[in-house]
Length: 264
Image (tube, rainbow, N blue to C red):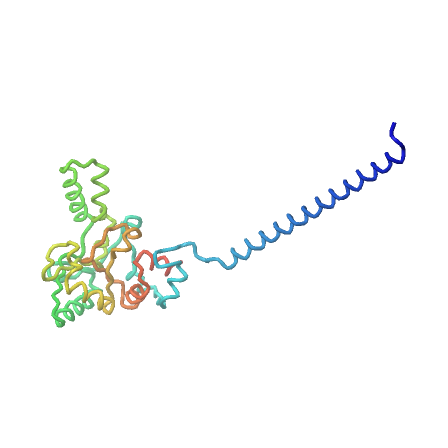
C-alpha cells in the first residue's frame, strides 16, 4: 500500500500538469482567435481597395480604361452615333434610317458629309478610298448570309459547322451593323476584294492615322475579335462621331467596350 504522503504528492503533480495543459490550451485558443480576426481584417481591406469594376478587358479594368481618356458626355440627340448592333443586340424591328446615295452605296444621310470629307482628304494624300458597301436591309443580309452558309454546306460541312463558320465573317440577319447605315466597307488600290490584305495598303495606314478625325473607327480590330465576335475586318469602318472616335482610339478599345463604359 502506498504511503499517504506519496499519494498526496502524486495528486499535486497531476493537478499541476492539468493546470499547465489548460494554460497551453488557453494560449492556443487566443492565438487562433487573433489569427482569425487578422484574416477577416485583411479580407475586408482587400474588398475595400479592390477594383470597383468586375469588367476586365485586354486593356485593363473598366476604371483603368476610363482614366486613359476623357469620355465625352453623350447628348440624347447624339446617342444614335453609338448604337450597338451585333449578334447579342439585333437592330430593333421598328428601326428606320434616312438614307442617301454615296457612290453606288447607301448610307445614313447624317454621315455623308463626314464620309465625303474623309475620302477626299485621303485622295489629296494620294490614297484612293472607295465605298463598296454601305446600308443593307435585313432581307439583303439574309441573302448574303444564306449564300455563304450554303457554300460551306456544299463543301461537306455540317449544318452546325456551316453556321459557325458563316458567323465568323457575316452577321445573321438583323445583327449586322450595315442595317444602321453607319458602317461602310472600303476598297483601295491593290485591295479590291474584302480580304485581310487591305491591312497591307497605304489606305489602311492612312485610316489608322486619320479616321477618327472624321468620326470613324475600325469596327472589328484584330485583337478584339473575342469581344466583337467577328474576325478581323480591316476594311470595315463605322461612324461614331468625332469625339467618340477619338476617345475609342485613345483608349484602344472596341465599340462594345466603349458602350459599356458610357452606359455603366
